[in-house]
Image (cartoon, rainbow, N blue to C red; front, side, top):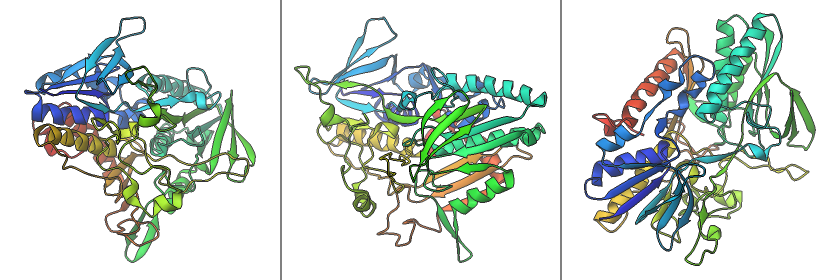
Amino acid sequence: MAKIVIVGAGFAGHTAAMYLGDAIGKDHEITVVNRFPFFSYIPSWVWVAVGHMKPEKTHFPLKPVYDRLNVNLKIGRVFEVHPDEKYILASPAEGEPSFRLDYDYLVIATGPKLNFAGTPGLGPDEGYTDSICTLDHTTRTATVYAELIERLKRGEKQNIVIGTGHPGATCQGAAFEYLSNVHKDLVKKKLRDKVRLVWLSNERALGDFGVRGVAMRRGGTIHSSEAFVKDIFDEYGIESEVQKGVHRVEKGKIFYQDYEAEEGEINFDFSVLIPQFTGVPIRYLDKEGNDLAAEVLNPAGFVKVDGIYGLPFDTLRSNPDAWPGFYQNPVYKNIFAAGIAFAPPGPISVPHTNPKGMSISAAPPRTGMVSGIMGRVVAKNIIDLIIKGRMTHHERMSEMVAACIASMGDSLWDGAAATMVIYPVVPDERRFPNEQGRDQFVTHLEMGLAGAWMKRMLHTTFIYKFRGFPGWKIIPE
């Protein structure tokens, strides 16, 4: 009987657990270790943070799902992995004794550490900005936003700044979606004229989103995400500041450097900025207690897998095969990593270092649909290894299609959403010899009411899928 341990129950880890439990859970031991007893559907937190959805609508308990799928659930934080002896140590809560789990296969799917400390003054706990990166942060942001609405109703003017709070941050899409929902909510409340709304980002250009932008062909004309987003911002009266690396926040002030190393600042009354993501701190130790970080982790703390690391960007750009396909550690081949937890071989967007040495480069996004696909690939390969002794599933980000629907108001009557389909996520200029390195007919940009209906449908459909109800496997990742 094989023992499989999955660390984390987000999109990647939970997807892996479901496929493993469904296929081999009756004959093999599958255990998920997660810090919380529930699954959170993170894409809908943008609605929670403007007060349009109750937090409980975005999460559900994991145990009933895992009971149906023959998966064990342990609540705890993994702090050590011993790859040579094949066991992990985890703590259920601060001050409580740790527990040990042995494994034959280990899946690291922790998601990120939210490195608010990487930008002094950033974040809701020890800083001056708010966040939609955890459920606690999101509910706090909803309260702060509600207080802002009351100030606006009293006639006060307010500055709102939303975007990225570190030169190397990712998840621009989540910040963009929250910005759009704030705009729509203010319009509906007839308060938009009292607000200066600013988009602040480390992107090379508007609509880059850390994926080198999106371009589609329609009627013989190329339409870019830069023009798409610019049109939206012009219509909505949103100011944009891109190519900016935030390096410090004080009460009411955000300080940044730009591509030319010029210093700047923006005043704010309310701000939601995405922090840098780093690897969740877990120690990897050999039999003698020596640190194995060099074998397992990259400098940011993400798990190295079957990618090619250390390539200059121009070389990486011309070699999409440098991106991993199995998500398997090359040294410890029974360790896999999926979602944000895996170490990408480099950025997707063109990196930039300014004259003062600040790297202002959007990190590659690895969330949502992409995370779910990786979770499925990893699960299928572990099943293969147990049953066949070899892996048969393989999907690089340079082979994946991804769809993103960014809500611009949740109403099914006058809401909207920007729908973006990208294929492949990582450009492949060999297969698609155009400036974008993507299939311009599959890649798509659209905005309208239909997207709002689709966004709400995805909320309902994916929560149904992740709860493991009948037919869940038919719904794609």
